[in-house]
Length: 179
Image (cartoon, rainbow, N blue to C red; front, side, top):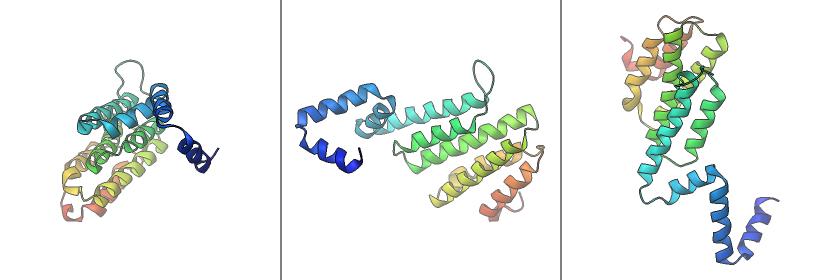
């Protein structure tokens, strides 16, 4: 079935049946529940703040789990960011989560030492993506210090990680050339 056929089928349903269908889907699928809660909550900010903390916990758990070993799965972190974006949060909150992800990777390599090249390449790409997002949304002053902390945390990392992050940082924060 495609969207056109689905729309036609939904338009023929009586309103009570349609409401029941939505409630059934709400109960059956946690992602739908989360999205509808964010969309229709009386206090949308509280729901989004809870969701932001939930997704930060998912990311944190990949690098600094409370139990078990770190997994360092970038795909899990990127999915967390993608799922959070679906809730239509403020750009500041999206940027916060994106920068938080990069911070976790930088803290991880700072704490445990040199990583593998693909790890660094992935975090370089995500650092740049976070910078892009922050600047496109005019949030550069809000996040400048956090980007700089990431740069400082990686000063002793291998594979040119710090050099690349520095290139990206100073490309965006050109006024901070003196460090």
